[in-house]
Length: 531
Image (cartoon, rainbow, N blue to C red; front, side, top):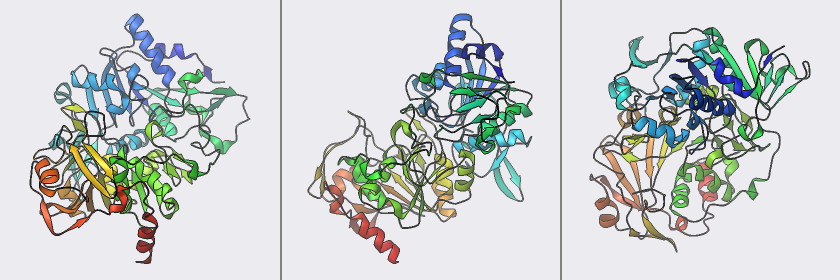
């Protein structure tokens, strides 16, 4: 029989200085109650302390849940993960104030890492990250001053005459994973989970290092009642199981449980909420014009999420296959803090397997967010005002996709008081008050996307905003389209810190996307199919 414990017993199983591997994205797949108890124990007794946490993505609700519980000086010595801001302000501030060592590595690397630890391989060897902020020549993923004095976790190696990045692997003391059910022998299912996050690989990795595996579940059932194909982590790999309180076992950071996300139900997609007319919707509409039938597509967080709702509203959502980095294939990607799940997915893959597909060039198109663009087309999506945001799956997706659309507001952002004030309607966009920061700048804070590398790889790249569209060329950015109602000199060129190349035949963004109803995507998709 398995060792059944209480969540409050978890801190006593983790020694000072331990290295802990966590599964999770948003709050999905995340052993949240263990983190709650670690925080309680540390505040009451000072132990355990000086822990190193490895995590795949942004774990939390971007506020006070998730990794935020353990993002405390003294409790957390080091954080190595796929995202920072997604874990909440506590980790962002810990990083900014140099009170912990914080590394940010690509989500795809973090997702596959446990497989290599389990197999006792030398590291994750990949071209993902070359020429970006995780390349040791450009920072090595070190996100603050304190970390720059620490060991390198990434190195450049030469194999078969080519440059690769070697991501070093940790020695794990503990794996904290999550499932739905465990039987009395410790066999674990993921039946109510919206994601598959490498729970098996994490357990194997900890065991390969001589560490222990602790699993949070909804319930414990009698031995022999679980279908063997439903068991995702066998009991031979589990040391301890605890049953979580429901409030600490949410399917995502937004949803306690939705059977659609776990593939147990389907719903009519025409009932999904429709985006209101806004800069976000205009940008998403123009981005959807890059879609063609049969494409396999990834949508990033933020503005790119709106592409799926626009496609559904226009009745062409089934013309191409939308995917999420967390493993969803088909259906309609969910937005907000449900990110990574999908409404009516056709399949839900292991996140590591999805990234293998992305890294191999499987994506036809990626629509990604963006903070800053340099004159040569380099993009920063990982740092703002010196504060680490994190890359998530951005680098994997951007390096692997055949075509890329960076979807962004031209200045400022979408937050109240930050973005531009515009009037949209009657087929026009008029700028009233400008956003409080420029995005097309002479020098970007970090290189999250390397334009020169993209050109060498033959990728087609566009930068879509609410008022202008650019494409990447060997000579730099080329302005190709303006929104109707926008003044080229005042609203575009004067708001950039560098002069782009202006196309000889400057096009006009379709006036139809600047009105309440569009009904224009269907003909565009049909024309693309005819070609």
